[in-house]
Length: 340
Image (cartoon, rainbow, N blue to C red):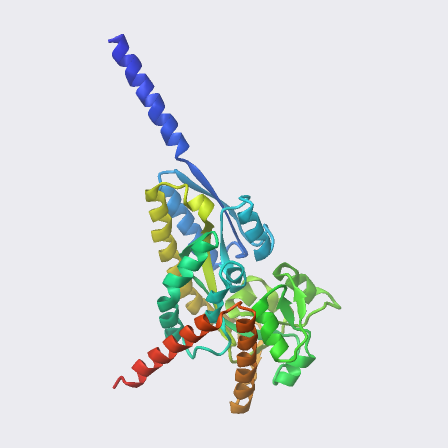
């Protein structure tokens, strides 16, 4: 009887120790400020994962850029100081740059087109992330990007006279502005608001989604926005392979399944919130100008194509990947024209 009790005690102790070893903490960073619609979706996802994992997988969240700009977050993930994050196209480009073909300016006419091309390219994009040390859990969306300024912008010449922010170290932005013969002001995204706020700040013009302009409070320092969006900015929910690969199969599956659902919710919400935010910005006094004509669009397409050639030459977005995206786009458009 004593022996049986001893064996049972040892078994329970061993089981408890094994369970304790299965507890994991995922340190996760995002630029998203707390309290926004998107951060609430993210918080709900965290609670869902922690609940469904029965506490075996826990999060430690760092929101609002407290861990620095996206390059800072990526460096900390690679050093295992963090394990995951929610990134814009800028951060995605530092993981797998070909994916940024999806936010080339004026490539897609609507989200149906971008959704189709993205879905077709996604297996290759996921493989590219994995090869570079990351697991892509989901593909949220930042939304349509507009120029915002303290001054009226109604022509490309007006843009050339502006002190336009460039997200420091962004090859896509650098290529676009170089092709447009515009000299931007490189800054970390963390420095944008202070520079807009300063009496003699270094910038007077930015590019961001309508929802982002409100979420980051940039709109309080701006007066004008462009009517037509430049591109539909992408996003990615990622964690390091180093962390993901050590998880048990059930926790890996839990992250992938719920991460995709959460990202799809953010993408859907982004499209709603950006439309709503446009109306809010107008109520806050932002005036939307510049209905680009055929001449403006022709010039912008020439700028886009020159920037694309530079990105292909540098292999940031390889020519074969870019050509495949364009081929898929034409394929989709041909199916739409055949519909009755």
